[in-house]
Picture 1: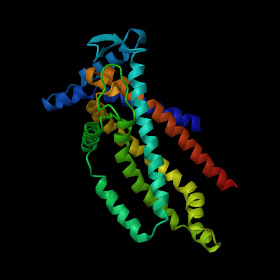
Picture 2: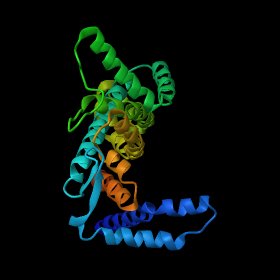
Picture 3: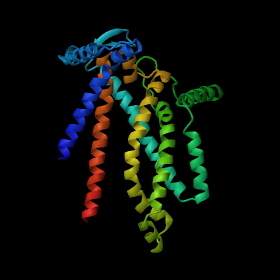
Picture 4: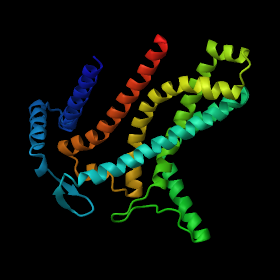
Length: 290
C-alpha cells in the first residue's frame, strides 16, 4: 500500500508539473480576454512530444550564447543549484536546532524575547541580506586586502560558502522560531514532567527526550522552508551570477525548459521527504507496538 501511495503521489505531481508548464498560454489569453484552451492542450502535446528522442533536445547556453544538447550539459546546472540548496538547508537545520536547544535551557522571559526578535528578523528581505553580504566582502577586502569570497561568478568558476550563507540566513530564522514552538509544545507533555520528577537534569531532558520527539515535527516543517528557499534561490543566482538551473530557466522560458527545471528540483526533494516520512512514521509505529 505504501508503494502504491508513493507511486500515485509521484504520478499526480508529475502530471501537475506538465500541466503547469503551459499555463502561461492560458494566462496570456485571460489577460487579453480570450480562451486559449486548444492552444494550451496543443502546447502540452508538443512538450510531451519534445521529450523524445531525449538526446536531441537542445537548450540555449546563456554564457556561451549558443544552443547545446540538453543532456548531459544540463546536469552541471542542476547539480550546482542542488548543492547550494541542500548545503544551505543543512546549515539552516543544524544551526536552528543548536540555537533552539541552547535557548530551551534559558528562562521563559529570555525565550519570549528571542521569539519576538525572530518574528522581526523573518521580515528582512532576502535581497537585503545578499547585498549586505556582498558589501561586507568588498569592505573587508578594501580594509585588509584579503578577498574572503568572490561576490559573483565569472566563466566556469564556482563559489559556495557565501551563497550558501546568504540562502541559509532566513530559513535558519524561520526554522529556529518553528523549532522553539515545537520544543515548547513538547515541554508541556506529561513525559517531561515525569522526567523532572525522576530527577533528570534539564539538559538531559532537552537533548534526549524532547529532541528525538521534536525532530520529527521539525523535519515536516522543513518542507515549507524548502519551498521558501527555492523562491530565494532565483534571486540568489541572479545576484551572484551563479551558473545554476535558474540561469538555465532564464534563457529557456518555454514549457519544456520549465518542465526540466521543476523536475530537477522535484525529484530529489520528493525522494528525500518520502524517505523521511517513511522513516519517521515507521519509527513511531514501532514505538507504539513496543
